Length: 479
Ligand SMILES: NC(=O)C1=CN([C@@H]2O[C@H](COP(=O)(O)OP(=O)(O)OC[C@H]3O[C@@H](n4cnc5c(N)ncnc54)[C@H](O)[C@@H]3O)[C@@H](O)[C@H]2O)[C@@H](O)CC1
Ligand SMILES: Nc1ncnc2c1ncn2[C@@H]1O[C@H](COP(=O)(O)OP(=O)(O)O)[C@@H](O)[C@H]1O
Ligand SMILES: [K+]
Image (cartoon, rainbow, N blue to C red; front, side, top):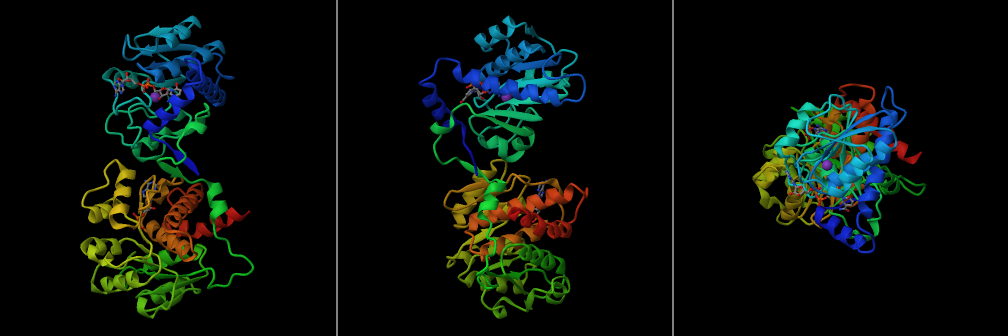
């Protein structure tokens, strides 16, 4: 699991670390890492470079230490043979010592953009930044057309602690950050502007508070935590999952949700609803019945995808909520819950809600907006449940304050029916005994992995193709 820390926590850790170090020691560490990454990128750039030698570098240097990092990295690149031009975007306000070092090495200070830039180093603002960019920086970014943009610490202009991008901001190919990940690297639109993230160790780790603001799961977490069956298991010990999804009108949702559940760790999938025959045709291993009441005992339930929002689903939702087992409420079940929040009055067993933005608004009263982690946390606390807020960087927030951000999303998931598959998979993880927030996080992670695998071969895969990929993607965890 990768931790993610907000600016105030980074500043506290940095102050502790700096106590035992000479001035500029951290900036030199940051600059050394940044320069090394730039050299590698230049080496990999198609064309003439064997590294920094001969490359044209432009530095946009802002008024703070972020500009200092950029100038000191450029100084190192100049010493490797690069030609570098720096523009101080706030004029006189620039890191004096770093600028002197840059010029002493042969760097050129300019006021207008050079005609050719291989690599642009964005040192405009870092974690001391307010969202948005000075007008001068916006103009310069419009005139420079670099082959590659490397952001120092964060893409300048983003809101570092929320991932929001309310104004102009840099769009980086690579972001080189120092000490730890920050929310902007993993959340919201800022994450899309971060590009590939390179984390440089500057010795901050021991000084960071042990719990970050957010957690980003990794493939190793999946390998360690996935509940693979063992020799002593039978279908019941692996967990029975109940799926109350689909309807005569929307049988596809039932088929996709059961496909998601079948690819998960549960040993037995029961279906309850009007699409029983269609589910059987697609998945002969699923046992079907007409209603939740006649489905027997399960270790989890999923209700909502393609269910409709009429009386019949409202009745089934009450049945599911009355059962003392974890449940996933998706799609139409979320709409019904939003209309009748009192349905949760006596609910104690774990609950996972899987809203997209519009469903979130129905439940919470306002849209998640661009402070997505905070929004998901607030809903989880209000309803005392786990919220999986869908999006390109899906967030899982638990009422105990844990927040995960999924790093595996892929635009190929933006197609009808993928949410049904995800909901079934999460329900299967719940039936296997995985705690709610972790089940939601693991489901989202593997769902994204499967989408990536399919999208590498099919430009616009459909949900059933992503569902079909899941067993192989999950199976590979065991290799
Ligand atoms: N915290 C750490 O552990 C380390 C930080 N370092 C660097 O230091 C950076 C932080 O440096 P600073 O605290 O000097 O802050 P910044 O370099 O982010 O810049 C702050 C300055 O920019 C101005 N500013 C902020 N937002 C603006 C906006 N939207 N438009 C115009 N001006 C704006 C502020 O008034 C302030 O003068 C980090 O991002 C990183 O690059 C590294 O040198 C090494 C270690
Ligand atoms: N642009 C995107 N990038 C990555 N993932 C996306 C994007 N848009 C949607 N998704 C994901 O696709 C799924 C869509 O679910 P949902 O909106 O419930 O669709 P449906 O109800 O049709 O199944 C979610 O897992 C969501 O996080
Ligand atoms: K920056």
